[in-house]
Length: 130
Length: 142
Image 1 (spheres, helix red, strand yellow):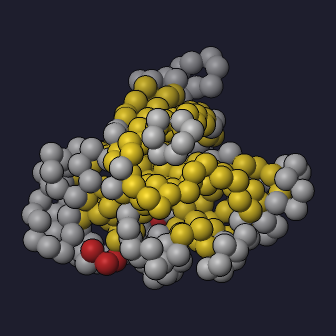
Image 2 (cartoon, helix red, strand yellow):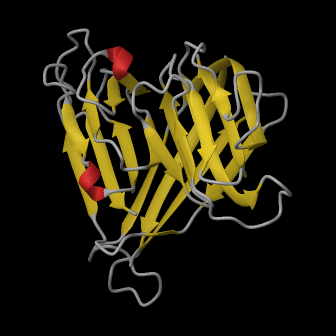
């Protein structure tokens, strides 16, 4: 068993009248397989659902994603469907996310249904199997 | 308009460390940050029960009628909603209020998530059994 320590800090001086300064951390014990995948993907708008970045075979996993493309939006979809209406997460350039995926659905990444093209080397992904 | 600055750090020791060994021979020390422009409406850091009803149904924290992109923070506080103090490991599922796109997060005690939720998805939480307390906030993308 291995240990992963994520820490999230949220700060702002103007989202509300009082300043925001939140910091949370956790100690995650990873699964017996100790699976860690670090990948760079090039999501497109052509394949059904775009590129599969996670398979349910891995079960519950902690997933980090970051849009490292200069300009294109990248969508995350839990189905083989490139329609933007099928997506649940929209990552603009530079945005990132960290979440515990339940592992009951595959996860795909694409650039949408608007002919945006290929986000070459545009998505950084790290997956840690729970 | 306002600015929200999220910073995420992921750390793990190498797998040869004597204390809290990590996954592989190389340690992980990843830190990313961003500067997000936000606008109203927003919900600041709040404590809610997984079965609270804010007018859109039990457990619905963001209704699907909300068409804006929201930056969402949610954390399982590890205590039952019944008294706010009894420790629990009840899992909390996080999915869409519209419940049509199949995304599903699973929060264990102490676990958290931060992500930009697409508009018209909504956000719904469901505890595996007894309701638990959650820390939750969201900010509309500006």
